[in-house]
Image (cartoon, rainbow, N blue to C red; front, side):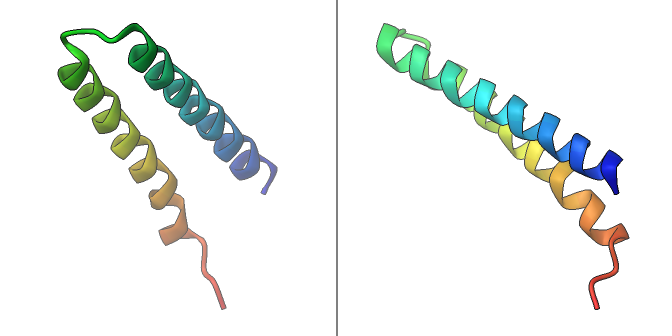
Length: 61
């Protein structure tokens, strides 16, 4: 149980890290803004998939 919580917390920190990087990119107003955002959002989707995998193993009554 503790491993699952720690794993989720680390994923949460990664998500916060990406979110802050998106804010930084918006403030600097890059020309490559769209492509960079696409890369970050695809990584976000991968993180969400990682979160969704353990739910299959947890049997909710």
